[in-house]
Amino acid sequence: MSLFVEPFLSNAFLLRALIAGMLVSVACGVVGTFIVLRGLAFIGDALAHGVLPGIAVALLLGIPGIVGAAISAVVMIGGISLITRKSRLSSDTAIGLLFVSMLALGVIIVSRSNSFSGDLVRILFGEILGISTSSVILQAIATAIIVAMAILFARPFLLLCFSPEQAQVSGFSAKLYHNLMLGMIALAVIISFQTVGTMLVFGMLLAPAGAAALLAHRVRTMMVYSSLIGMVSVYAGLLFSYHFNLAAGSAIVLVATLIFFIVLLVKNLQKEQQQKGEPAHD
Image 1 (cartoon, rainbow, N blue to C red):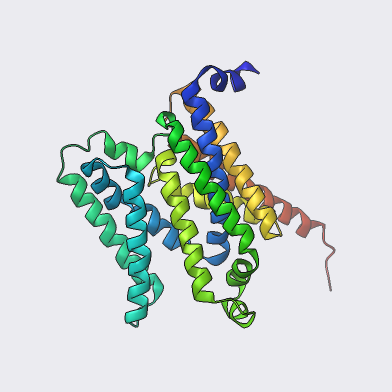
Image 2 (cartoon, rainbow, N blue to C red):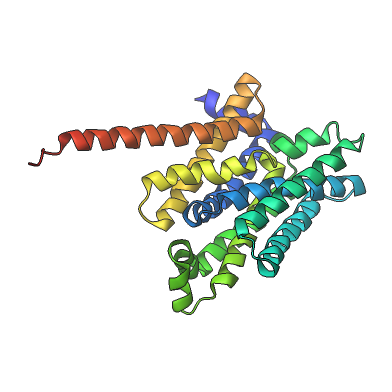
């Protein structure tokens, strides 16, 4: 039993990482549910990578990376809205344009500076084992905001996921709640990059929610399952990283992805068994 508990009790860094990871799991579990149901995976990926230039500039200026990530996220969401409003281009095209341009800008900034040798790895893959108490508090506040928004706007968000037209007919502004949903995604990305990094945050948004979508039949249940799968992934990933000297953020996302494929395999086996058990019809 000490093999599973002792590392967290004897190591303050690992315990803080566990708490931070649990908070990220809840935030990504809630937001990831909307991403999967609404079909916003592309913009989630774009935001996860598009915050790179803001983080890079922030670190060059000596200000917290989370501030730069927030500014980049606002620029991306504003740019997507501007392009779709002022042109005939689809939102997917606008997202793609902003995605590649922001990522390219981030790479240029990093490549032109000699001070990113250690920071680049931290930006891309997170620093969950070195996360500070103040960062954990910030994550707790952001997670509380995300959960509160999901509860407060549950009905319009639900309608938006399945029928934007029905949301409009029911008296909810589809555009307003779509933007609020994008804001939630951006907030989840911003608070999560410190933990698992910009490269891996997308995995935490999609893998647990994808597995939960295969298990749950209700949106609230899907959020709970997604959060729990994320928590299990964080715990197991940290444990593996501790005992086998692995990169913590990558181990967490790998466990989450593995859980998704296990759930997918089990559900498909169950489906095959049910089909075999059904009587043949003439």
